[in-house]
Length: 110
Image (cartoon, rainbow, N blue to C red; front, top):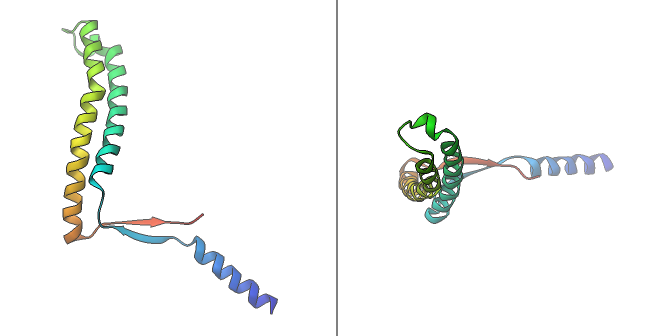
């Protein structure tokens, strides 16, 4: 009797940790746009810092002050483009997911 209880418990625990598959059929436009904005802002910040240090090497005709101005603008320009691209890509995904099917995701409980 204890052996049967142990086996049923083991099956129950195994089934809980088994990966479950889901399909993303729709992506939130604003949440995707916000995430792209944050990612691209950070990318622009990193590239902006690199531009400050390497502006004289990359752009020989640009002075150091102009390189700093460009570097300060980069995170905000990247963020703006990230917002637009995030919104556009999620709208395209939502449209195509209706006809093709969404991305299959696999989740596992801890």
